[in-house]
Length: 525
Ligand code: TNX
Image (cartoon, rainbow, N blue to C red; front, side, top):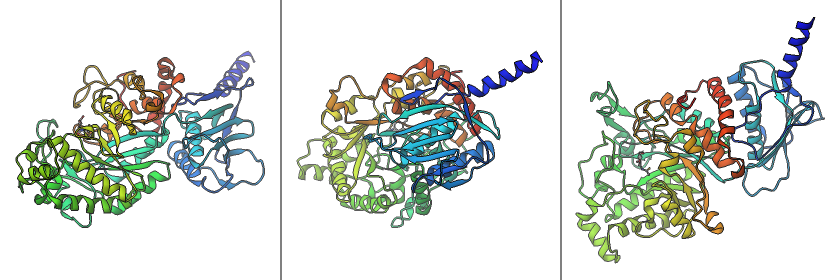
């Protein structure tokens, strides 16, 4: 009898204290005095209070199906029956995504300031579910008030150095959504491959999307020149990705690199370079001297044509046009470039690069969009409306904010996911060292900025360059658990940041990675 009683209390207390390990940490979380759980089973309805909440319901059902093997009936709101209630609530927070949430004996109640907020409330609900497969999911009674700290919470993927197929890009977008992040920066062009179909210039993908041989010296056991490596996305596939992301309240930010990192484009259309070629889709990593010719008007026509096809595919108000790592050697030797400099009173090649970016900005602005560029676009003078992505540390971002430009912080020393996360390099990486506690310690708003300047920091982004990341499993290994740490930096109030507490919650998060079938780096454990 005693034994039965003991087991019963054990089970009851387990039930009453179902886990609450949420990442990113909500702004306000309260547990009621009387603990308890609401149990979700296959019969529990999702009850929608209005239009626009279907995306959240479908995401919840897709997740339940994949992870626990069942879905829930979706209903329009009728009475007050128990269930998962998806609502709207007036919160009036300046950044999209605020929500309130309550779990009690009547169910789960999520009220977003807008669709996005309700969607994020659903992400929180997923984190309250058990980390083992089960057909009855106990959720602890609690109440939450939550809202994002930054408006730009980004994750980047380089698909040029290595190509990743559409189903994996979708999975990557799911990972962004599960972390309440809202930008997917898609690095679509570089020296080693052009990855987006442009109908007016078919050679970009016929020629520019392919290189001969896997890259020698960097992939142990490969270096096989007989391999024709590459791939690209059709415009139809791009649309599919943009729609998929939109249903998760994620904006896809396309990047078309200029004037550097242009080998793939030059190989396809040799007249776009200063020398006329021949060029090759690069087979090694690094920075290459052949870049788009700044003295040739055909180059500007070409890039405008490309953007005319790219911009309508992406509803994003921003277009990323690169601007990083552009050597000036070919411009120095090019008579047309020198003439352009003389005609426009440009003192040096940095000013020529600035001319290039400003000319493209003018075109892009005329189409109602804003450019983003890497911090090199500060050199030679910033284009008037440009947003700066600060990657070579924070200096460029700080300078841009002081010049009243918006900034997205992506400093190598904190948020470069291609860098190793283990002290003793545990797999082939580009080098560097960014362990999970380093990314967790990142503060995007530098103390060097005044309050007004600090408002220009829209947020931050982690970048995954893929020179040494050859397949989806390795992508997962590089991003997790670091993206979970970044999500808290970007979402939670700065006052809530606490490494020890995060480390405890991360143990549960790792169980979730396993539940998702996702690879992750375990060196921090
Ligand atoms: C610099 S970050 C680059 C990339 C490389 C990366 C490797 C940036 C704007 N440019 O082209 O892949 O370093 O870490």
